[in-house]
Length: 165
Length: 185
Image (cartoon, rainbow over all chains, first blue to last red; front, top):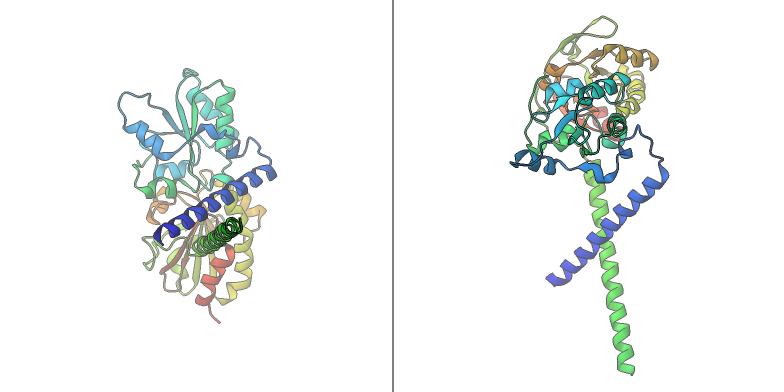
């Protein structure tokens, strides 16, 4: 009886996953992706919060330069310890600020961009910021995957935050 | 031979039954997920059923905006920003609600979390917002538990108590369903 229930639950879970996968594929086909969209960032370049935490807590690994390219007001309330505010990625002035910050760095520098200002599918800042770094020749740029926002996907999970400018 | 065929038919029937049951479980899971998504997304907030933190600001029309002065009205306090596409989608609803439900005691208040007030002022004028909007800052954000993602809207009843918090893109009908019973008939 238990085994049957387990099997049925397993099949149901597989159906749910298949449904989710097909939906995401259909969505991807329908919506054209511009560089203004966060989804213009290749899937392989997304970094999960847990992976970034692991990197931060592990000794002897290459520590990334973490840059917030969202809103300064949100950054001042809470941000990832050690991260820097690099200007709003949706505005030319922000892109310029980002460019100034990284210009002198080696193009192999490990950089993590994040925003978390609003739901990822509506984020206007990550796409242009990522595109700028790629255009500048940076080869090791990752983008933090915060699907809802910084509050829900980082702070409320109990991950460390700092306040201030 | 006959027994083999019966066995195959039985096996087919069993598989069909299993698949049907799995589909039923799948549909139930979908319904459950839908119900969860439709629920108040902010039911776990620390400010719920507590007094809304007061603030005094100068709005974009240079008038004083004191939250406490709105006691007696049901307030929808909307944290938004010009770069937040979801916020901009919600604003026409707020505008319409202010017209429709204002006479019944609803007051929308906008708090822009833009770093640059000029951007907020531009949208305020372009959308012809009919409710007060003031600039926010990190202090105000922190007093509301940290506005670490937009949009974020608080429903405050006529006694000044937070009744609900809506985070992220929310079904506007669900917000309307929650504030309507608090208004004057």
